[in-house]
Length: 249
Image (cartoon, rainbow, N blue to C red; front, side, top):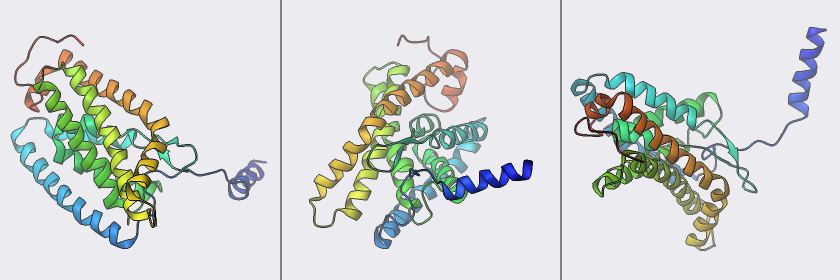
């Protein structure tokens, strides 16, 4: 009976497939020239990410464990697929705003790259030819947008929560804006480029907009929580200069 049930389940999975929604930019979407260009750009950032990690692990106590935790968080968050209507693709959180604030933007590119590679190899999320494009959108654009918005927010006097919210929100939105640009450049054909990019980006917003807000809340809340309970971590990582009283939201 057990063998019969297993055979029935296998048959159902094979002959009664359900619609699949693509995660990241899937294999075969980008023409070779564009895929090669994004690979070349991504490799440069990954190289500097390796250098930043190598330098900071010698300078900052506990850097590697935090790197592992942040890398795991980015991997898990970017694995949550939320189907996007009409397009056949998925939205997902990025997590790179958080990792960029805690680790630095180049190190965040590295952890995002590792997560995307694992997903491409073992989970059929994204692809190897499109890995450079996915690193550029989620790793590079997401990390640097999150880091810039956090630093900018702190300079104008935002609380840690508000600056963290800006980092998480910006990382998410800029990830999908960059993805839209990559797809638009590769696929616009005879249609106006800006029109195609805008349509792709707008198609993501019904799902990605709420996710960006949620990721902003999670990022801001996490940074505030660490500041309340383990502020020395933020001092060591250069997020704050000294252990200061907890600011209001």
